[in-house]
Length: 152
Image (cartoon, rainbow, N blue to C red; front, side):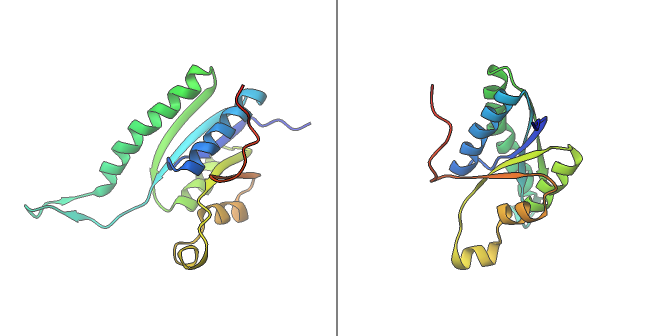
């Protein structure tokens, strides 16, 4: 039998990622796993205000993500689960892959937006890249899929 000791759950606060969080909670509860919640802020061009001061947009995004991530952390803590989190700046797929190796996780649970056509070609697919390059199993959760986890 296999044991899942550490789970990485990237969170972007989309419907798909919120479902992935539910899966991570269920796996952690069932197997006594530690969960690391990860939010990745993509670098943006510098914004210019009226006074011509340059304001990095990443700081605002990090601040907002920290507040939202705190609420998710509290859900895990209230359930008595082992959880920690981080907010990183960079290319989402690269950061997720680096973090999975750094934390030595043996499962990644993440949402997929399910982009198709031109938007997928232009933007790429973070989930697809992670599935192809991860050194551990990756569970992809879609926002519109039927859940396996039922409410009790």
